[in-house]
Amino acid sequence: MFDTMTMTKVVGALCGSLLVFLLGGWAAESLYHTGPKGHGDDHAKQAYVIEVEGGDDAGAAEEEGPSLEELLAAADVDKGAKVFSKCKACHKLDDGANGTGPHLYGVVDRAVDSVPGFNYSGALIAVADTWSNENLDGFLANPKSFAPGTKMSFSGLKKAKDRANLIAYLATIGG
Image (cartoon, rainbow, N blue to C red; front, top):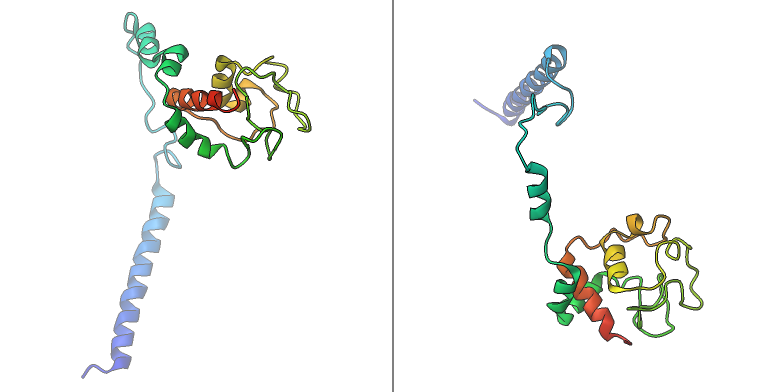
């Protein structure tokens, strides 16, 4: 009663019907859609703002964590070595051996723009004289905003603890 040709026709008819149904739904949605277009465009506009006394100060206080000095005092050099794995694609730790970036041997408290044989962009010397802990922390957090125009394409380390661990690790290299 059902041979392969009949089954092929039945399956083809079901697939064709599904296709017509889906295309009809798409056409109706595009014709009669009244909401915002795209994903997330104007979906959740706030109608009014409820002002809370001291609301801005409380949010800023919660975001601040331990200071850089406290983080450096509790830094883990071994974890800093693991964080350095993100850096070693471009930087080397050997004195005088530059990679895509300058070598980081003795970088803590070293003068900025001081590695011979490396062509710096000049953006770093405009914002800092030495690679102090604070300058390293700012640069590692977001190189492009710390020194606009820098050649370093790394986006930065978002966690302050990771930056402190890395700075502590770098302080042990050639320091």
